[in-house]
Length: 333
Image (tube, rainbow, N blue to C red; front, side):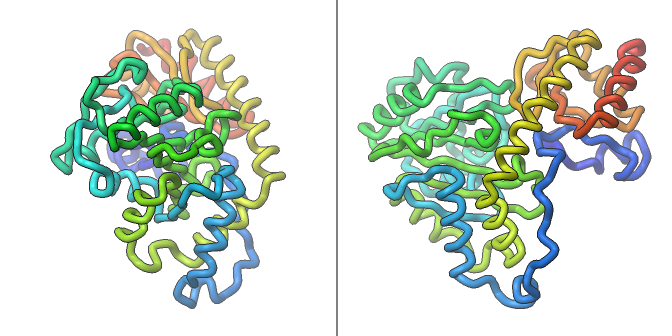
């Protein structure tokens, strides 16, 4: 499974319809931001205005605490942005903190710049020019402190290189974001809208950081790359700090409940964030398929044969459904 969130494979193999499934294969917030029912008709009938995009970016600056010395651009999802990074950043050896979200490796490999994969960014190759890492990391939740990231960024900047940080899950980990601490270092940071706000289908992503790199990225993005409804919904959600604070607390509480449920079922939970839990056991593939026969879709990993990841079920009823299914499935495996 290259990505979570697409139930096509699950339905083809195990049957049912989309509504029959409890999809835990993603790290997307199950408590989505309420889509406004008062969107002006013009957001649907008119081409997106430049002012609407500027309004969205201003909201992102506020929500993500992006200082004025950094530039920001918006795109239809961070997947678009990360796939273009190899074309805007300098030539030279690329290092990827691994294991992590595999699209980063794939994006650089497609441009004939296959990254050197390392388990720790604290001992980088001496000739590293570009370092790419996900923070908090997906899927294990590993977190690198801000001070260390700034030191890495300064080392790379002195070589004319860049630090790339994917903060797709930083919304739910207080203090994780590097953005407010970036000065003159060559850093670009990816921020995902859809995961925390639970609106992955809206397709909004941001790239913030050193102005030259952001300018290059902006030049690659087509006019009207974001839809009018996406611009309007995104700006409203990013400015709604009350919803963000309340939802963060809810996610943390729900993850505590999920961790207890998984542990009581006999799984060893050893990583994650408030949006997903990573557990280990001897036969995760068997458990994954046994749960799938009960219409629950989880995430397993080719590169880690003892790992299985669970997104938040979203409420007591779905948690009980998972708990009951786990008890049955584990007897089979």
